[in-house]
Length: 172
Image (cartoon, rainbow, N blue to C red):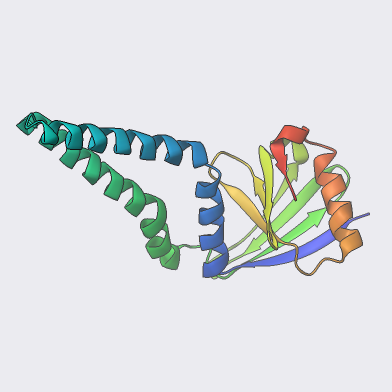
């Protein structure tokens, strides 16, 4: 059985992908928050005992700058740069069969086509109506599965998961 799906890469869809990508790094953010709280807690503790040196003030300032930089680079920059993305309004066509998937892309400037074996997929994630087929740690094909019937969706899930280890698939 061959499944054909078409997806338009809208600004909202690309921003949702970025949000999904960063949501998968909860451990990183938790560690970052704990470290920030520890530095600020030590600074407050030392300020109570009037032992807050210029070096500690500098460290607190650096941690604050790093926090702001991380938030800016993780959430704001992608929202600003997505407007200039060459994939905005690209029409992606996906054709899934038992052995491979064929992907065609139509943008304002060019058309491209590629055939991928399922082994090229690093991991799979699904959130709401978007299915993310990661081909690297940061790059993924976004498949809109909202138009699929329940049977087609289950068939696609079975097809993709049959070629990948279970730990690489996050499909709810």
